[in-house]
Length: 260
Ligand code: DAK
Image (cartoon, rainbow, N blue to C red; front, side, top):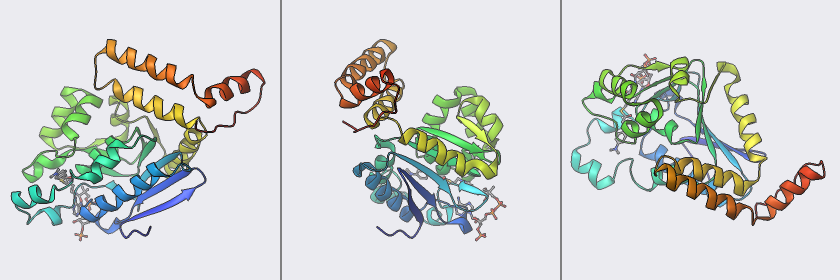
């Protein structure tokens, strides 16, 4: 498949997707979102790539938000009729069962921050900046920012960021729990690809199940979450990869995963 607004490369078992509108700080428009949805759908459907990294091109931005120039003249009716940014594309990205990482290499603002927060986790360059500055445009987050940011950093900081529109740097984002790790800017992509390769080397069913059970923690009570985790564990014990993983440990050799 060929894309105009994103780059998609296979690096062994890792798919690297790069938002590619550096002249607009990788601002997200409907074409970018459509292509992103297609790339994630291909990743999900193909069993060979086992982890995905999403990053931004250029030195400044992951994505500086939704494309303000595209939204400026749109009326409420257009947003509604087009189901702008809430159609199948974002559902595909959010609903991906296979693991993926956001490698945030600069500004992640508004929709850019919201996109990064859809990832299983965020690795950030020490130059990254996060924020939900929609209030400066007379609007508010529309793609999950008020919900995911609040779950990640708590009410007080999420509220402060949304109400003031200020950006937080990578160190603050890490200490607030939004970011898994901060790495030097020039090492971000290598680190993200290496981390993704580590995940890609794990048993694929187990990776999916780990992702599913951690995400379940946000949707349910502790008691139900613990039951859910136990059931998924029990299901995994029926897999060929469970037998292989445990036998490999006992036999002191590397496991060879089948994804079954
Ligand atoms: N949209 C369009 N173009 C953008 C952009 C954006 N979000 N951000 C930057 N650019 C463009 C600039 O216009 C400029 O283009 P030229 O003037 O060269 O043509 C180029 O990128 C470089 O930007 P700057 O010259 O401004 O660069 P600086 O380093 O001076 O400043 C900045 C960087 C990131 C601080 C600044 O560009 C900035 O404040 N950008 C806007 C950030 C922002 O407000 N983001 C939130 C956008 S609102 C929805 C769901 C979600 C959303 C909407 C609807 N529905 C479900 C309906 C999401 C909304 C948003 O994300």
